[in-house]
Length: 80
Image (tube, rainbow, N blue to C red):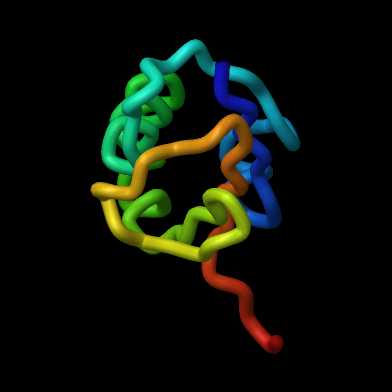
């Protein structure tokens, strides 16, 4: 089970601050992008392409990064 936390515009787009998904132990950022696009529709895809993911305290955009038990989805932030 992976806890996904959403921030700023991505939280607005999905309508929640967090949720849990039952993903395989070897699931990657690419898998998470596919799951989220499937859950929320293809319109979320372009936003997910520009998001960064905080995985085990490491900020990444690398689709090959293996997920941990908590992942933060971070859209680009302006002004700061």
